[in-house]
Length: 232
Image 1 (cartoon, rainbow, N blue to C red):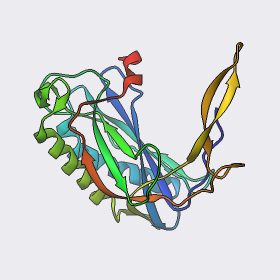
Image 2 (cartoon, helix red, strand yellow):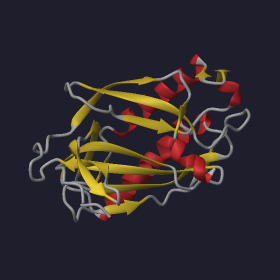
Image 3 (cartoon, rainbow, N blue to C red):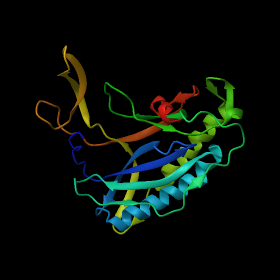
Image 4 (cartoon, helix red, strand yellow):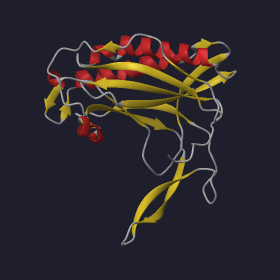
């Protein structure tokens, strides 16, 4: 197991645990700013339940009957001992008509931040869409991409200002935990593995504040989470 990620003040991580057919290991991590006091465990549960309600209302109509969300796990990332809680809301399954696509198939939501940077951009791979949403084998139709964009923006708006205890959820953010990489030798003959350098560690750049997400777009090209193919 790698070293723990550095604490980030006033930030929550919500981990959405999806099911895609027989695959129970698909997840999406979404990060949110918060103000007020840090959440207690009961507040983390309430935040997860609220997000599950938004997903049920906004995302379930975009997912096939074999896809949905099991739980949301909310964690306070302000310290290594920040409170965490798992939603108690019931899991849901999708309701979209059409043929079921492979478990690796996703809709890609790209997220823009104001800061200039080098590296991968923040994104969410959303398990959504059916065969009737395809224009060709590799393209989603605009009806689906428009619906996904509208749904995600509704989720963000629905999270903004949600309050439990003294914790007030803010907007979605992106956090940069890593700064470049180092080549770590292994094996005989010697090979090298590119290992990310955690910000704040010796020789790395300092930890930076989370970047607010300023806009969203949905890619028309069908995306894939290939690492799920082995479990499909």
